[in-house]
Amino acid sequence: MEKEVFLKAKNIFEKRFNCSLCRHDYERKANLELLPDYHLNPFCTGIKKSERPIHAKCVQFDQNLLQQQLLRNRKTLFKRCPAGFIECVFPIFREGLLAGCLFAGPFSDRKKPPELEISADWKLDRKPDNLPPELPDDLDEFLAWGELLAAALLAVDSRRRDLPGSVKELIHEFLKNNYQKNIGLNDIAELLSLTSARASDRIQREFGQRFCVLLKKYRLEAACKLLKNSGFSVEDIARRSGFKSGAYFHRVFHREFNITPQEYRQKNRKNDV
Image 1 (cartoon, rainbow, N blue to C red):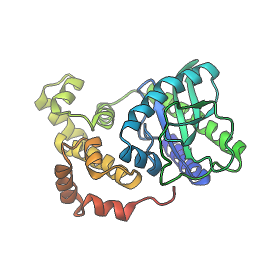
Image 2: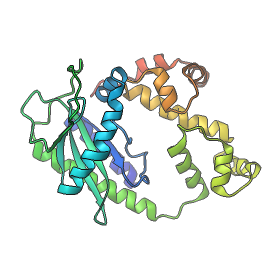
Image 3: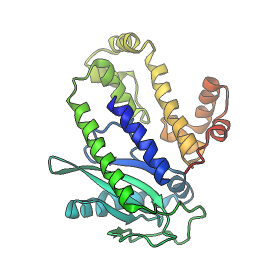
Image 4: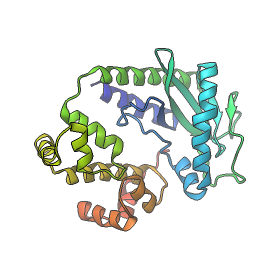
């Protein structure tokens, strides 16, 4: 129930302030169903598609300079990323330690931005063709909502990790966090301390599906999300979703949905951000 309430609040926040939310989880234990762990919006993904070196710069910036600033000041801040966009960062602390952060954005600086506490040293030589929306007019309301969401995210994660996990939940967590990797039935068998044959039987009993069918479901769900929300090419989406090639992904997708990935993207493209 808490998960559904959080997701509803998240959707309201994104629509109210014309932005996207994502999280960075420094503990690597977060529930990725609540929020993506990278910037899944048309502006960031569009830049990374056309300017490939920027992805490494973004990762380096967020993992080093940003974390240092959050640990030093321990408060919400505005930052300018290597693409030149403005984002608001809400830190999440667990027992005094920096557990992660919540990102809200991106925004353009077409009107006077608030004080930027951190900016990337390296920036694009050119202005992006497609600029994100301006910062919200009521920054106090925006900040208050964001800090409440960050606190709610911490609460949902904390309560979830206190619950005993069933075998089904354990398999679900493993697939949710590893579907994009080259994994197989042997990995599940090792996770459950079973032989491959017994692990296969257990998956069939818990999910009513064979392992390969279940893995394909997780990968297709991830691909559909990227097709709807990102600017990545179909080849990139195939790789990020765990498929070995764009051509193979195209065949699997068409066989499953009777529609091509490109047609699915056109029909489901988000236009509200």
